[in-house]
Image (tube, rainbow, N blue to C red):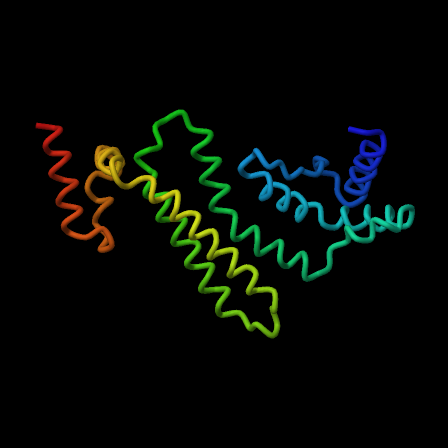
Length: 202
């Protein structure tokens, strides 16, 4: 950290202390090799919105070029939408990354939950008035792109390894064959999986 960065950080901490007496927080950077860094960065910025604004106002007085960093009310609104959009991904990533237990048995459940989340968000975005939120089309495109990427990863649980995922799910005592009770699995596939697991247990 350079001396200028360190000084700016100290000033931000000072602005926080003027607002509240709880534990002071530093900003979180967006690190490309860390899964949840973008979500964590936005969440921290939202948490520090007021002291961050006060800090930036003071900095702009000293360095006018920093005006480009100022976020409008609309920008903050977009960030709130991003938090809602990214939260389940961050939660599942943390949950899976922090457990020492096997997670293959939950793979399809997690994918289904994320697909449902994206479908729900897409429906909510489509109900927005495009005249009042002209930027909403960007979010819809992002959701569609995210859904296609998720489908790409989901497809890797099929083919030669599909049976392994099915057996792992069915052998989980908390799920058993109930995981395939929803209509989208289909009777034929459910019957095939059950035959497989029965063959292994015989």
